[in-house]
Image (cartoon, rainbow, N blue to C red):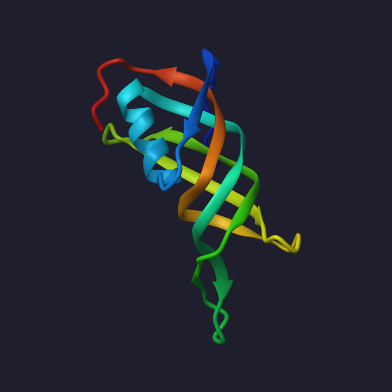
Length: 136
């Protein structure tokens, strides 16, 4: 099934994340507090002290599943993208994919379940839909 809808950008918001702040939970809370129903992450850079990934994989039987990995080390956010999407029951979903570099330059990434900010992170969010009455 193909699903699409017409999105009209309304504004771009800059959000700075502080040390020890959670990236995904922080973005989700920020969107709720600002009444953001739909948005696209247009840019995100910074540093992490921990990254929890959940990536799609295939098991020995050929079935799809998820592999989880936690990386507790200093990483540079090379890129993060994702979205905030309205849910049919009225809430929102915050979904982030991330690429991060170890000091060696080796990249790791995928679906970001959560990440803890190290020295700071800087995110730009393209807002598509807002509702001042949203509370989650």
